[in-house]
Image (cartoon, protein in one colour):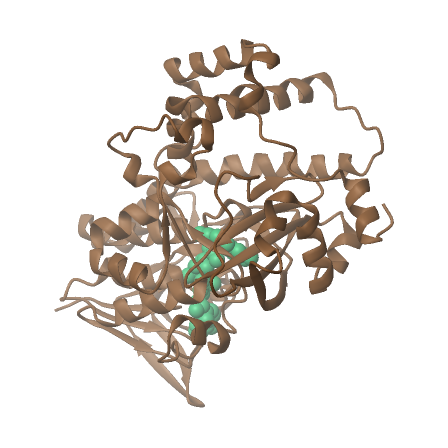
Length: 483
Ligand SMILES: Cc1cc2nc3c(=O)[nH]c(=O)nc-3n(C[C@H](O)[C@H](O)[C@H](O)COP(=O)(O)OP(=O)(O)OC[C@H]3O[C@@H](n4cnc5c(N)ncnc54)[C@H](O)[C@@H]3O)c2cc1C
């Protein structure tokens, strides 16, 4: 008999789970509380698609190379549809700064290091329409999952509210892709499923803009569209159909700034103070296409349904944010969810034993995803400390911190900007194509990094980015906020 699968949630992870598991034999039902995408184009969908279940829907989104490569290899028709709907591939060569771009020569593997940029509404509606064409996949939308059906430790299905009526739907396996607010632990009566958690330490603010008719994006060779000023991090996200967005991430400790940031005038005023964002929103170039969206309570967390090696529940497999949440700054959440969803068919093929399947899902997630989580947590701890220090006038970091900062800026950063081999290694890790930090320990790469570190600053001036923006006090003064 063919296997039946209920996928709870039609976000990025749920859609990828359906893509991964659809083989023509399995009967897959994807349930979501929200309505389907409107039968309209990307611009109309951005305006009108109600997605109460995905509060981050109108924040900037990018897919990393590992996910881009996966889509191109396994779902080429989806890749074509994404590009047709306006999503933008940004290649490794385009990403490189001027010193390296002029010396760039293609090497096999470079094509794996493309970003995919687009408004998330466009990404989701395109993936959703593609998944609807796959064999054995059915969507039920406006369907609120209200609980689980279970037989002891075994999950046997879901209680679902559709059009005001409760239905009981059974299945061999249930995939929890309901995102970061998953209620499965509550429905199962399980406490302490979160093994680790830590604050992202920031609030996210995003505003969308549209290029005016006849206007172009600024040339690539100017000041960088992404950077970290300590008291604010900024990023310009190119998007589909002549749109782009700017995200400003403000440390939680910056109470006055974050309170003011939802005001579009303040948001734009901050952008105008930062050369890398200012040129994008010049009045003759672009006009605002949205209000400022804000989001807080950003945590990272790692969940497990195993107690040692013993599953606390069977036939339930969490993927995406329901399994682990990451700081959005790293742009990894969708890639992590999609990669994890694609573990499922391989694990299901290896064994039919639900306990072994859950253990294997943990094993693969630990091996391929957890290192990124661990490095992120450390970097977030450092960023939170840095944001606190920014507020102390005349603060002098300790020697160890100064050495670390010098290694990051004068060695790794400078080498990544001046040495194509180092840039490639760094970006492979950034795109989740290999371990996040092991590349810095590989002999030949480390030698190049150390050589750059040892080079006197006067001889490597061209390897430093120009100052990304004003000091904190200067910015606050420009905004009329007490420093
Ligand atoms: C501000 C912000 C910016 C981000 N930027 C990026 C980025 O640039 N790149 C990146 O890769 N990641 C980014 N992320 C992370 C990314 O958005 C998430 O990792 C990703 O959406 C997780 O996908 P998911 O399918 O697990 O959950 P979601 O996308 O949250 O989807 C969950 C789905 O489950 C449904 N659902 C929930 N509860 C129920 C229920 N009871 N009944 C029925 N349906 C239900 C919801 O309606 C929703 O459709 C960002 C996150 C935030 C917060």
